Image (cartoon, rainbow, N blue to C red; front, side, top):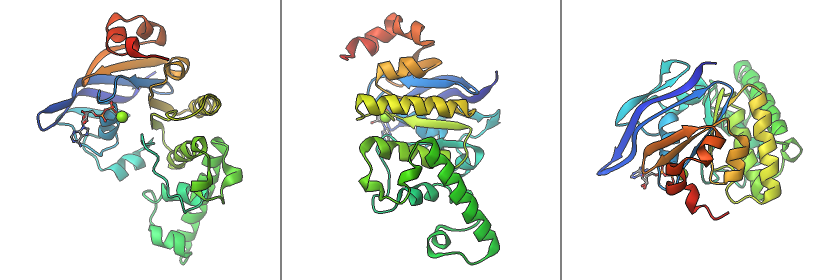
Length: 257
Ligand code: ADP
Ligand code: MG
């Protein structure tokens, strides 16, 4: 196995605050890696660095061995990294299918306007067909293809979160970053989501997951990294993490569920 994503000594400072402090994480291809830690530990900031939203103050991000540090977000998507956000970012008054299609326009020659206004030239037409097919395939994976003509706002909460995953999948990534995908879900929705994440892994994707639900994390992850105040305090298998005294003191000990 080889590392698909490697964070090397990543540090980012916002004014006087060191939000991420010399963090090293290496994720093998085809695995599910969780990143856990208390609120404010720097988890979403790490996702923002990997996806090019922030440039680190120092350190490197390698993807497939290539240095992608500071690359623009749309280029990162093109290279095969997709993500969902901690807070749902959907267009409620657009259909489920349109919400998935929007995510792919970074990859094409056609602009968003031609996508919604109709099709003029053959290149655009071919691209639009591919986008439609990719979108439908992604919706099948999260079991939302039947609802493709519904408004996004009419979906249940769990379905909306799955729709965001579909939007990421439709860009054909090899690495998928999920920022608290199970937050606010009921137990049944969580079960469904877990099944889908496993299915996505079986499609040869690598998953980097931030999540607070420990049952969810421990069940799904191959390995777990733990952050506290921007520093990585542990890495290991779910079993190792659950008995790590530093992790229990910083995080798991406070977990009431
Ligand atoms: P987590 O996702 O682990 O809850 P975050 O990565 O969102 O934590 O935040 C880590 C810390 O960095 C927090 O103290 C947060 O306020 C700070 N932070 C994140 N982004 C910015 C920013 N753009 N400007 C200033 N501070 C930020
Ligand atoms: Mg966060």
